[in-house]
Image 1 (cartoon, rainbow over the protein chains, first blue to last red):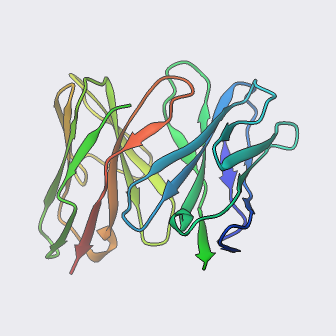
Image 2 (cartoon, rainbow over the protein chains, first blue to last red):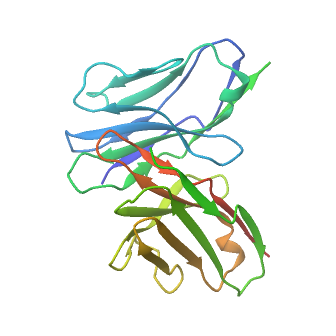
Amino acid sequence: AQTVTQSQPEMSVQEAETVTLSCTYDTSESDYYLFWYKQPPSRQMILVIRQEAYKQQNATENRFSVNFQKAAKSFSLKISDSQLGDAAMYFCAYRSGTSGTYKYIFGTGTRLKVLA
Amino acid sequence: SAVISQKPSRDICQRGTSLTIQCQVDSQVTMMFWYRQQPGQSLTLIATANQGSEATYESGFVIDKFPISRPNLTFSTLTVSNMSPEDSSIYLCSVTGTGLYGYTFGSGTRLTVV
């Protein structure tokens, strides 16, 4: 069975600085998708960035980028130029690439605090 | 991506009662998903709701406790039955696109059972 591990329950970063959130996963599959979701106090889960396992190139969305190390099964999220609005819970998630599989496996989350 | 309207946003309920949570999607979707997020915890899938068939429940969740309806391709309800304080959680509905497209979530229902 697949597992997703986020080893940092909480992280802090100064405004305008860069922070990296860690995520490791375990799977025997070769085809899968990885996601980072943000959950602010409003509870709304927001998709931040996504990565296809077969793509070597790391995904980037504006200030958010990932470091995807397939062999190490690592999928870390880098937030550059941190803003107060980035404060939230961040969840890493795995989804199998098997056709017809829609279940996501979520990590336990990392609470990010942004300090003014 | 789809837009999901979830109601109620929060509720405080007496133990032993039931609460029905509604999710309305602005487009037709085949599958809808119900998640539970206990305080300070991650998301756990309760069940997958397919239109025209019974919901598929994950291990640890049963239909008697969490009955689900899916009358059409844009709407679903989750009922939390015979509630106890342990049911206090955030409940989220979601839909998914294919492949690289991730879940779209409703805004969640914060349930407190007293």
